[in-house]
Image: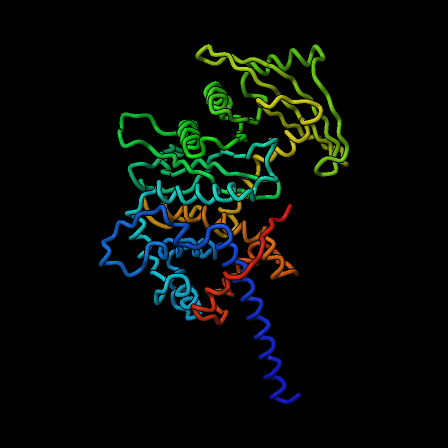
Length: 459
C-alpha cells in the first residue's frame, strides 16, 4: 500500500471522527434549544451588575462558561484557560453562541459572580424544572399525580480555618475545629434515574453571633416555605428521611396539600413504634405478597392505617405506615418502613413503596454521589468568595440537569447508537468534540436547527 492510499485512509478516518463529533455537538445544541431555547433565554432572570461601557463579555457568556466548566467536568477554574480559551475550535463554537473572540478567563468568572444575586441564579434552576414540567416531559413518572421531590442535606466545603462569617463549626475529639458549608437540596427524582435540582437552601450561620448555629432541620423549614411560594399549585410528594419526621413537617405538608413518604426507622417517633408493636402483637395489619419484585425478589407488604401521633405542642396528627420486606433469591431479607398520608390499599401499596419511598435514594446515588465522585468536583472550592461560591454551586446544578437530559435523550442515542461505556466516557467524547470538531461559528449555530423530537429513556 503506497503513501497516497495511506493518506486517503487517514483522511477518511478523520472525516468519520469529525462526523461523529459533529453529531454529538448537534445533540447537545438541540437538547439545549429544545428545552430552553438558548443560553440568553435561560439566564434571562439574572441581572448584570457591571457598568455597560466596561463589559467585554455578555453576562450570559460568563455564566455559560461556568456551566461548560462543570458540563465538561474540568474541576477547576484554571482549566478553562488551558482546555477552552487556548483552543481555536473551542473559541469558534463559543463565538457561534455569543459573537465574542474567546471565552472569558476563569478569574473573570470569579469577579463577575461576586456581584450577582444568588436568588436570581436560583431562579434559573427553578425555571429549568418548571419548563420541563410545563412541557409534560416528566409526567409519566408522577406517583398518583404527584411529582416526587427528595430532600436531603450534604456537605460541600470543609476548611481548617474559618472561611467566612457564615461557616458552621464542628469541634472534633482531638481538639481541632472544622469549618464547613453544607447545603440542603430538593431534587425532583424519577424512576428512570433523573435527579434534577429543584431548589437549594444554603445552611449557614446567621450574622448575629448571639443566635444559635444553623442546622439541616431549620434549613428544611425555610426550604419548603420557599418551595411552596415558588410552585404554589404543583402537586408534590416529599421523600424524606427520619430526621424530618415530626409535627412541623406533618403540619406543613397538610397545609400545603402535599403528600409525603418519610422513612421510619426503629429509633424514630417512640409513640408510633409503641402503636406498631401493639398492633403487631394483636395481629392487626394488612398483608400482600408479591413475587418477582424490582430485583427478582419476593416482596411482602404490611400496612397500618389511621395511626395517631401527638407532637410536643399537643397537636395530633394522623397518618399511615407501610412496611416492605424484600427477600432475595439467596434468602437475604431487607426491610423498609415509611410514614405516609397516602391511604395504602392492596392495589397501591407496591407502587407507593417501589415507585415512591425507595426513590429517595436517587438524591444520594444519582445526585450527590455523581456530583462528588463522578467528575463534577462538588467539594472543590471554585471560589473563596462566599457569594461567588454559591453561584458556582448553582451552575453545577444547571450543568448536571442539562447533562442528564442529554444522556437520557433520544437524540444522543440516535447520534451514537453504539452507546458509551460510562458517563465519564461520554464527557470525554463531548469535550473532544468541543475542542476538535472543525466548525465555523455559523456552522455551529446551524446544528441547533431542524425539526426533531426528544424522548427520554425509561432507564
